[in-house]
Length: 346
Image 1 (cartoon, rainbow, N blue to C red):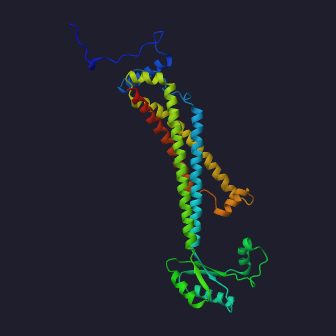
Image 2 (cartoon, rainbow, N blue to C red):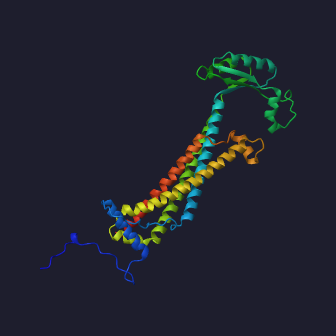
Image 3 (cartoon, one colour):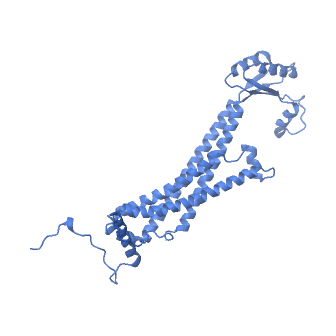
């Protein structure tokens, strides 16, 4: 009596041969390689020849995708560098403003301006936590007004307020309210400005710029992920016979996904390093130009606005983080795309 074969004991059928009665050469080589890897995993000690790769190194639009990943990494690193420069500049401005207050004396009829300036300086120096106190000279006042009123101003004929800069040496001992009360009691037409309004504006500007930089960074990384997805699908389509043969002869999905993941991991690492190193080189060049006495017009204006446009340690650490993130995203995206495609084959 013929023994009935149960579904559990039925061996998986090999794919049908082609017109010549055999599998295409590369498909057969890859399938044999998968069987050999399984044999190694079971402890087979026989000498096995190296198997063919599922994803050949130069078969997956490598140069085009590598260029896309490098460009995206470069833009992401530029965004990180610009955000750190603006954030450092805003913090420097805020710290400078918080370490200084200004006494303003408005001119009035019958008021001796020089006497009131001396009284304001004496009142400021008497306060705890106050360092240097400096009244702006006539020449410094003219320099401040020159962009709006032109040169050759006669301060005696114009009702121009006089300014006194008060440096704060110890913020814990200094009392702004005490200084205001002393100036109001001793000096006519005087007021104290702690620059709180400008500090709040700088903080808001820095937060807005950082938020915009994060949004740009997310868009760049999202574009890179989409590019990797399309490249992975193209790779799956170009190696469809290989993938389907491996899948139907019993190769695990993790094995196939690891082959694609390894390929895209190296591609993402190369692209991330290319973009990151290019961005670092650009940061160094900009820093050298900003320190040079003769630089480009744009660099000169940036130095006048931000002070120091050199990217600090935080910027270079951000570049390293971008390279790591690009590498991980590229590998993870390709793995997810391959697993989704294999799931549709079932």
